[in-house]
Length: 171
Image (tube, rainbow, N blue to C red; front, side, top):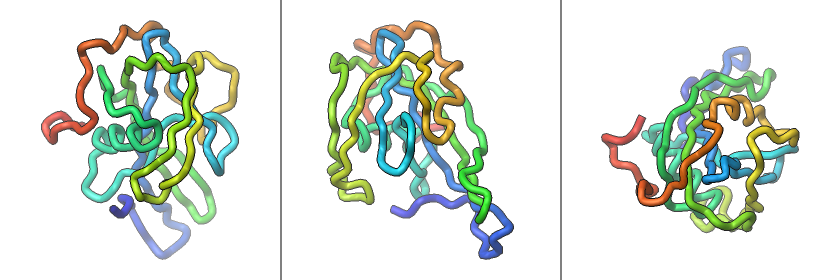
């Protein structure tokens, strides 16, 4: 699928807007799932570009599954949306949609290899958990809304939902 570009203009002084879904995935300890990805210095969270016709909540489920291998999320909630400048010349802005979701995940660290056939096929993500108050640097200002997370996250348990939301359940 093609990414959604909110505005495209050949005049380089007019910014391009690209939709992104960003996931703060936490477990019962309150820790946040992160990885250090290629092309960026610092921690990252599961995130990615909205595909054509895809809503932010749908992209959230897809990106978490693709980048972590986690197929079940619980208690999904929208935290914030913003417009973030990726680069100034030529101007490119991300329309970022931040979500919080919980998982029941006992592993403290694991490597997930993307096998979806897309652009990241074969990429390995080394995942681990960090305290939201970490002093570690995040790439792309992805820590902007960590303060919006609850202090203690209940165990996901029986509240799990499947990774593919129904159209009525999307934002």
